[in-house]
Each structure stands twice: as C-alpha cells, then as structure tokens.
Image (tube, rainbow, N blue to C red; front, side, top):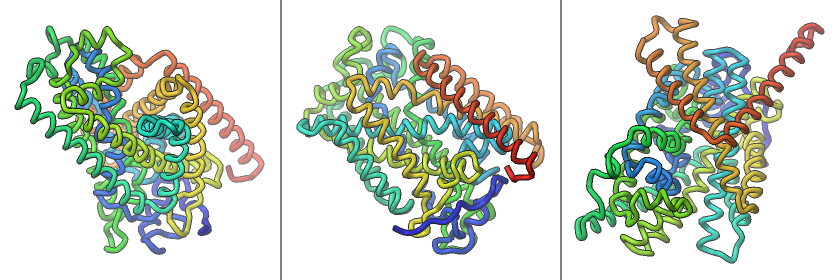
Length: 489
C-alpha cells in the first residue's frame, strides 16, 4: 500500500488549489490532489451520478402525480435546476477547490455557514450512494434470485471502492465505459419505441405527455416537479473535483490561472443540459406507449414503481425489459462510485480545514486520492446500504431522508452567490441577473421543494442540522479556549 502525506493547504481561499497545479508527479504538490481530470472526465462523473435512465424508477409516480404530463415535469425541473447549476458555475470560479458547496458557503457567507453547508451536503453524499448501491443489489437479485440483495449490495460497494482507491482517472475511464453502455441501452429503448410507435401508433394522444390527460394542471405538474428534481442530484458532484480538473502534461492548463474552474463550470452546465434532454425523450416515449392511463396508475400506487418496466415489457418485449434492468443494476453501482468519490472529496476538504478529524485530509502518494476520506465514506455507505438491503422497507426508509440535505446545501449555495458578489462586493460590480435574480429564483425552488418533502425527510433533515449546529458550537468553544491558552485553534 502506498503511503500517505498530510493534507495540502489551510483554510484560506486557494488552500490546496494553487499548489496542486505545480510540482510532483501527475501535476500535484506533495499532499495535494492531482490535476488530471479532463472536461470529458468531469461530465462522465456527473452523468454517472445522475444516471442517464434515472427517471425509470420514479416514472410511474410522476406520471400519476402530474395527471399524465410527465415530460413537462422534467422540462420544468431542468429549468429549475438550471438555477442551481448556474450558481455552481459562478462559485467554482471564485473558489476552485475540493469541497464544493462547503467551500462556496465558507467563502461567500463565512465559516459557520460553510460548515453547515458541508454538514448538510454530507448527509446527501453519504446516503445517495447507499440508495444507488441498494438499487443495484435489488436489480441483481432480480436477475440472480439465489443471492440475497444485501450480498450484491456489499459486493457493489467493494468493487467501486477499490476503483476509487485506484485513482481518479482510472475510475473515470471505467466509468466512461459504463456510461457508454447505459447510453447504448437508452438508445436501444428509444429506437425500439419509435419503431413500435411508427408501426402501431400511440395508445394515447401525441401531446398528452406534455399537456396531461383531461386538461393541463399546473398545480399537479409543480407538485411532481418537487419529486422530479431529485433525479438531478449528482450533477453538483462535479464541483467536488475542482482541484483535480486540469492537464498536468501541458503547462498552464490546470488551476485558476488557465481555465480549470471554467472547465468545471462548463461541465456542470453541460451535464445538466444533457440529462434534461435524455430525461425528456425517454419519459415522452414511455408515456406514449404506456398501456395504463395516468388515472388508473394513480389508483394503483403499488404498480407505480414498476410502471416503466411494465410499459417496455408490454410494448416492446421481455428482452428489452431484462436489458434495461441489467443496465440499471450496473449503472446504479457506478452512480454510487461517483457519489462516493464526491463524498470523499467533501470529507477531505472539511478535514483539511480542521472541521473533521485531520487524518482524513491525507492524500495517497501513489494514487493521488484522499484514501482515508474515501474509506470513511465507503464505510458509512456500506453500513447504511446493507442495513436497508436486509429490511423489507429499507429502500423507502433510506430514500426518504437523502433529499433534504442536498436541497439545504443548494439553498446555502444560492445564498453564497448573493453573499460573495453583493454583500462582500468582491471581483467588481455584481451582475443583477447572474448574481441576484438567478440565485433568488434557485433559492425559491429549493424552499418549495423542501416544503413538499415528506414529514420523515424533514424530521431527519432537521435532526441532522441540529446535530451539526451542536458540533459547530462545540468546535468554536474549543477553538476559543485554545486561543485563550495561546494555542492555535
């Protein structure tokens, strides 16, 4: 096992970001993350985490909730999440460091807000991969029933953790292969659906996926949007790799001085746009082919989870049903790989700033990844995923709590844009549209979605926030005592 060295940089802006572009093998200073990720790598990580066929699992729920206007739901959700993507693009140029929203809130709003943002994002980054691993375990169990879902789940955690420990570029290369496979399967579905529609026509009106059945309901669409935006959680993880975006083989191509932050910003926006198109196309075709009406589906909630698979089976054939299921099994595991990698960078950044145990700020000198932070994230994810896999209601229990953390962090991200550009007035005169209107709209979307979240999710999110505030107060008191004793905090 290669040795490790201490985390680079301190809590000041720039920390490890500037040093990482110079010296050391792979373009990184000792203890710094290596700048090796290309634009394509960043987009791959984002799309892996989101998953090109993310709507498959919640298609039936959204179809019923929107009264059949499921494609409009995803179009509106894409526009809504574009505000968040745009705020990420603004702040990654301000603070191109690992840690994502933790770093941005810290820079734009202060140390306390930064800790809260990182703490809430941690809930998302640790549990979203657990849900994805569980999806993988359930899908593989369906294909090989003799093996219990928790065994497949644990195996998926082990394989993807080893890939993450191997190195960020290796994981990205393997991830690209898996992503290509997912897109091929999606393309097969699209072509098959078009062939069926041309040959036999659509069971329902061509405009129904946009307008709904029996008249358009804005309230129903907006209610469904509050669920649909959760399909996009993951594109933000791209920002966690800000310190690793660059090309060390070509002098001057990484870091703040030569467009590294711009590369991350473009990747965030590109990933969201691509995902939005993929989601709209597949839901439109599935809604046209669906044998059951939205009203019938709403009356049978037990059939909503498998509505997409049932549609594929009935309209195209069992072979495509099995192909989509196998693709989802592999794709979910690699969505978790991207999420685990992002979680490791978040823990690394918070440990480097002494907000978490300092041991997690170590960078492996052989692979250039934060090995201890990755292992810590993997352990928490493994426990949560296996626990859920061994319970009949495990998926519902786990899914209900993963959203509030991310949405709260998104809210602090938007506030950070306003705080940095308007309150601190850094970097020249702020733009009204970019630095005020867009983040305010994004904040409004976040508040609306959190208000629509389940009571269980709100309770867990509130409890996690309360625990974070206790940790923050405790840290401040300890640092205060350290300063009074002449000890650095």
